[in-house]
Length: 496
Ligand SMILES: NC(=O)c1ccc[n+]([C@@H]2O[C@H](COP(=O)([O-])OP(=O)(O)OC[C@H]3O[C@@H](n4cnc5c(N)ncnc54)[C@H](O)[C@@H]3O)[C@@H](O)[C@H]2O)c1
Ligand SMILES: O=C[C@H](O)CS(=O)(=O)O
Image (cartoon, rainbow, N blue to C red; front, side, top):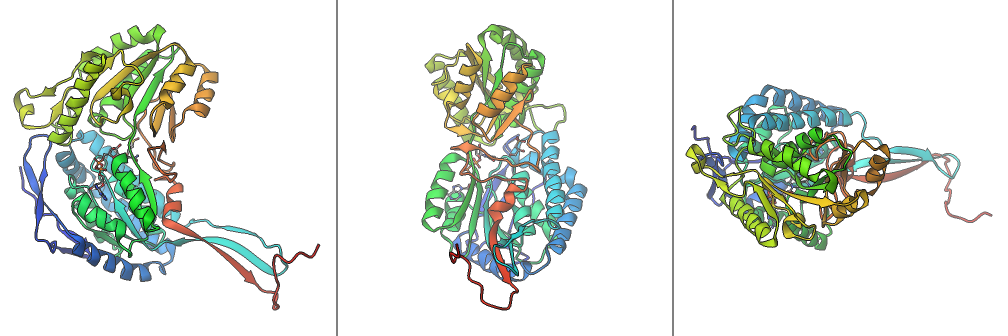
């Protein structure tokens, strides 16, 4: 296994060692090998990055947006050229299977293409003034310096969802990537550099969340925090940044369900459950960790599902025949096992899985058997809490109405899916499922970049990544009145 050069910070267009002179290990979850090191930075490194970002933003905001967009177009081209190599790196440090890693890089390419188009839109409004010879409009202005904090499970897609709209809108960025995926972050920064992004417009500061991430929340030079990660961390960020009156966009955890009604196409539902529950080893925020099925078809659904789960090929994601890779680290394995033990104690029936896999080469990595629990009740902790692993809780219900109630009866609200052939039920579900994303006759994963992405309740705080909605996080509305009457006109005088 090649050992990569240490991942250094990227500040003001230069790759630099952390002032702490400390480094962390980057471990391949497929086999426990150390791939390389990442800079374990401190607050001083963050200060340097914020200074560089502020200086760069002063000039970048004045570059016409269509010119800014040209850099994004080159980012898309360079990502296309490096797609295979970046995908392999991503699989090595994060574990997802290679075809999913390629799909993730493609998401970043799509986002770069899409946001490059925004350079010629960034639409505001023009609207009549209530006074004669006066012009009224609103324009999007950049916010300034954007702090981006990202998780390991989608190390390039999520970074692209945040950095590309921020940059095309005229902001500069300070990005703290997840500790587990530094090489993918470095590749993305290299692409920006090669694409000709001016020095300081994108800065990368590697480090621990409680050190560098925490310092970002208090830093007076950062105007907005855009965060994706766990609800626990997001809650802390919201309170801390809120006290500093910093704008915060939060995308957090999920406990997503697939509902299968009695009239559903069961083969289609099984296919969707397989990939939504076990794709990326269940480590997607949109992963299906619950199935809600009408009693009448529960037995048949399980009879078709369980053999398919047992047939999934688990192993190193670089092997194209593998369908389920490792989970991210030993700590995640421990968390998954604790929930599985809890499920059994709560009285759920373990149908398959429920153990770490250690056969042959799997012993060196962090593998968990795809797991199915049946007989789960909605109030059980395995049906309420985010496990973030390949564990599925199947619950039987008596009616459509009960299914909606169970779907909505969790603290999270990211993605939901329903399988039925009844068009009335489809439209009722579209209205009543309390999640940011609803799928009909499809699994809970597979977001498209030109639509808003995010959730309700403890999944988010009202903002969205992706689509045009992302621009609302990274811009301020500026309202402008131009009076060309040549005399002082006074609005809001009651002439009636
Ligand atoms: N809703 C979404 O769009 C979405 C997408 C992907 C992942 N997620 C969620 O992310 C979680 C998994 O990711 P994770 O384990 O990396 O999450 P995490 O919350 O542990 O870490 C996310 C990021 O926050 C940083 N961080 C940690 N403590 C911090 C602090 N005190 N201050 C500032 N930053 C801090 C980490 O270093 C990392 O970069 C899951 O809950 C998953 O559902 C949500
Ligand atoms: O988090 C990024 C993913 O693209 C979300 S999804 O699994 O495709 O919905």
